[in-house]
Image (cartoon, rainbow, N blue to C red; front, side):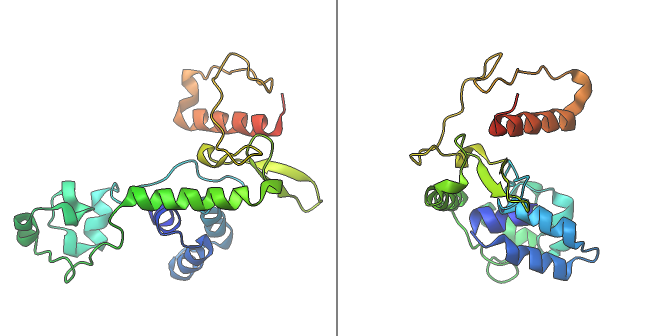
Length: 206
């Protein structure tokens, strides 16, 4: 997921290239699962990711095992060695540009903004594929049209403006009652319910 987020959200590389590489390199490659996950990461799937994973916020164990050249760095700078003081790099035996590559992106926020603008530009040029609530529209094999989940930052109105989230009330304008999520549902249950409500709202169902 971290790799997919970095490739798509920051480098703006077509998700298909990532899917092909993973299928080629994964020991347990599965065509259906691999393609589905990459589609969702690339905002082309029916269950697009509603999150972004930072390339500098992963766990340390994996990095230390598969990037042994960084294993002696303290956890605080393990995923961003360019921020480590010179003496720390020297003590860990890290020489940027020699023992470990110099990073290819210096401003993650700026690159992410470019990605968002690129997606919005594409969606504005294809308004026929947007619902009146700003969700993506797809055509099913039987010819029917339906909506799929779309991240809030990409939902636009007919004029191409990013739609502001309506203030939540006990009952929304689409007639969906606000549901109180019980403690027993757990984190996954809450997320599943939220997705269900979003899809119902997008489809205008009660």
